[in-house]
Length: 484
Image: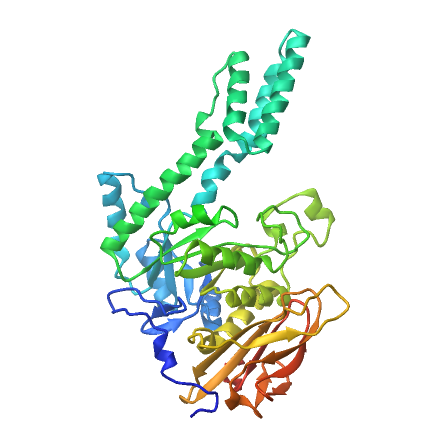
């Protein structure tokens, strides 16, 4: 019983205290569903076709974006799939908003006992949208309208001065000097015989609006919690905004995350604003989301589409690589990159825009089957020790700090202790590496590298192997974790 150095009671230490009347999470923040810790695999798409929904459920998806609709939720129940319900703006409650509370309560009370319901969701990307709603006006439309008015100024000298003042206002905006830029714009509007037409879109006003919305959403979450303590509350963010500001929005939630779609890495979608635009931005944003909701679950939204599927443009038409869909290796890497940085759920957005016989859809289903088979190890408690990987130096700028590892001990199907080790190479080039720090009970034992015919034998608490760039290896004492 000690062949992995496993203490089976560890499996019980991961569960946070909870009752059937209260939503529960493990110590690693995996949601407890029907008494068991689960890896949440979700789709924003709610397939209209029953065959597609059944296919997704059969592959391992256990959460779908639902609607506050009895028939819709009943259909998901029949397929064995849970739902989250987006509540949108109705959950942003102002103080003493009796009518708003009644409207929200009506929805919560109507569906909180439905067996399909798993979670409520706040307005999507609510913090970012408070800023983004004004970006077009601030960066483009306001300067354009002012330039048109200046063009109608009769006196050339006055027009030249006004153009210089407009350029100065634009520069102040670009430098982030919001109050100064607003004052400069106000002077121009007044001189040109008009009032600022959109004072609500001033940058400083949007900052205050974002703070106000945070208070309203927190008030809404707290009211929902009064009515329903059995379902998780979660907030999805854009891959932007400061950690400090997101923490305000995450005060009352159980789970927070963001959507991040980096494929292809060289395509300038401006979807995110980290300097890292590569596949590893998924892990980097997972870290940020965990920092923005300390001690809470992290639910990440990954790419289920190609940018060409949702956008038009000359570059997309003329460049066969721009806007392409993720391939299998990229899809697999992004999921594991997120998991090894602490994600507790993976949801896909954009699958509604791809064909259900497409390569990307098949890859997503294939990955879901793989992750569902690996679930016993993924949701297992974190052990009190961490194995280490040391990469061998090579011809690149690699510094020997790859791959990233996750080691777990879990109970196999027959109750016997088993072990699994996931290795993710976050570098673009292949690397040889040595693992150390594995339990002594593994010495002399082979570890299967799943989805290959290879094994490695543990010696002195470790083994040596090599891994391609942006690749994933899963080693296990049993092939039971390998999906058919």
